[in-house]
Image (cartoon, rainbow, N blue to C red; front, side):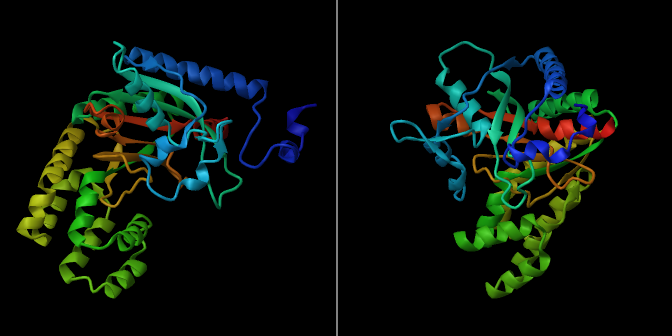
Length: 341
């Protein structure tokens, strides 16, 4: 039967929402796409690794924030809980840490499936193929930018007619600001959600209920406004006028790290539009420095994400090793490619 005349809903009769069957043509296109990615990564000095489909749930519980219990869905024969890849970066670092005595390339890439819960978005893909690049042993400004350059090459080779916008955040800086505000954990969780969604009316209401000082309200308002990379100096000066001397000391290191990063960025990466969002909060708790997400026009979901996680390796080995990486969902790339045909 010609696939053009076949009802779109035919596969939905026997495959659950969010899971998809790839036919011969789709599989061929995916293989060709993955091959082009592999060639690029290998050329940039990264080696391929293969991840397990399942891992023990306690691996994730030790690193992720609360509220992800519903994603830990299976048990093995001994009654131990298993999870189908809640977070693949964690699996990469855990696996490489177990081989710390091996003399192997610490710049790695992978293709692996994971399950993600969309909650309200039931029709969206739940089983996705993730493409990831991770570097263990280096996360300084130059190395992080080198990874984004790889990402840019990959994007230009695959979707040359599509542009993306990068949104940066900084985990350590954001945590310190929350500490300065001095709210308890429950209040902070609510604040984080309102900041992430830019919900100003609820933020004002929350601040009023908590008797927030005028100075701290100014800090919250600063967190709401995304900043162009070229305007980081203005953001720094504004923050210096709002914070007290003691508060400035707490954020000094992170603030210097942020401003110096964008100084390098503005010299080397003028072809990518980017902003700094002080309130960008990722769901994962192990990020220690810069985080970033990539967006394309008319899609509210990020098409890729990455960041710095300098303490993750040590949590498995006791050995400090800086690290950074990025990942993208291949399914989202394929959807955009199909729209261009």
